[in-house]
Image (cartoon, rainbow, N blue to C red; front, side, top):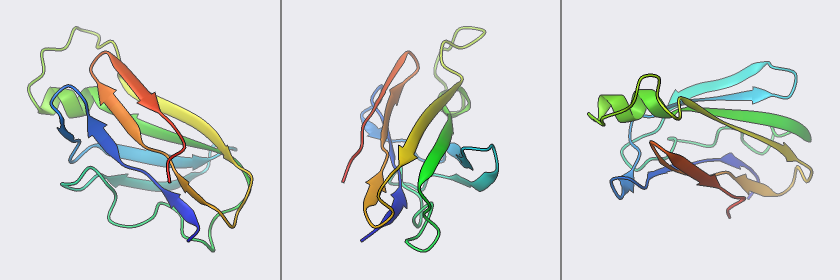
Length: 114
């Protein structure tokens, strides 16, 4: 299986981050996908399917502050994390790329998943 997927885990609450807005851009700034996570913290389908994946740089943007504010988190003004940006590149277009985000109002982690 190839393509690009993501999911978001809310580490502050120990739950999937449902209804978090996110965007995927090509390296040149072209918006490819704008969506929200489902109840499982995932997108309903791949961000890019196997035919749409091209090698090169990409950017994922996650609206973290808006998500935590909607959940009633006590955020500073301005919030410590507003939009989390993950810049990454795809080298092997035949491989599956999974870019998860583990996030709280004050920190995050990401990695290339499977």
